[in-house]
Length: 244
Image (cartoon, rainbow, N blue to C red; front, side):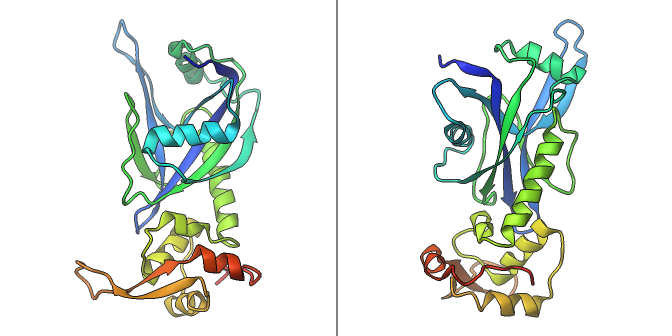
């Protein structure tokens, strides 16, 4: 069994988009008193774990996501480190750490990563723990300092979304312009004029229209598009800017 580093962990903020809202994946943290049956802890956390002695942060984050999704090559970016002295000092957090019996330190520094997944097509599972997608606008109580970590990840995501084409990681390979607009509105918490949004997008050489439309939809089928990473890399001197 690999040995953990007792005072260093990685926490992953896993964002997903279901064509309606931006979601985050949370893990249920529930603990009952073995003798009385009293509920001691009932909240949710981000997914994460301590790093192993023989791995770096990127490897640890990729391991956590691989175990959760079974997928490789998921968009993953380190965004901040959290090391407040009091970050695991609450009574609930102390009870949880003691219950785990895994040699965790009383002072833990965590490195935050955010990941982008199309959660309309990916089924995530975590052995022996309940996992669930929550809208970022309707969150349950979070354990540890995970609300602070989530807020920081969302801040970084919004900032980068305006200048780099990372939003396409949350969409299927083929998408409509309406789906793309809903994605940006959901993440940035705003609304765009439909005509202005489409005009701006259609000027981007790396968003390529297909001779193909949606299938099996109740409304009028919309044209499909793809994002070309190759075209973007060739033309990225032209500033990517979603300030519509």
